[in-house]
Length: 140
Image (cartoon, rainbow, N blue to C red; front, side, top):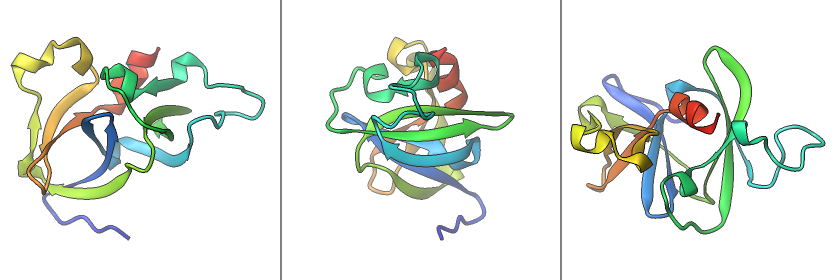
């Protein structure tokens, strides 16, 4: 079990091409990792466009093999899917002092409309803090 210290944020880290992405685990009500071609419901050949976001495409990145992360949002039990690089999912926690709002100069960038902040990781790299609610809006 991954413990989170007081004053720390529990995060899910993944990659989409060259981009490091993190999600606040408290914003995802259901999480399940599946192969990218697994349908959301039996009998579906592919996920409906409104319920899937390929983060590699959304960020303009070339990626390797895809992997899907199924998730639901608080107050909306509908299962959604985001596609990231296979094998890149990791649990992390970081001090809240290492989580920052998206700089104003980047806030209007078209490829960053799904991003709400940046996080300093332990290795000194930065990761985009992705807002799952924005993913749901962007996919609709």
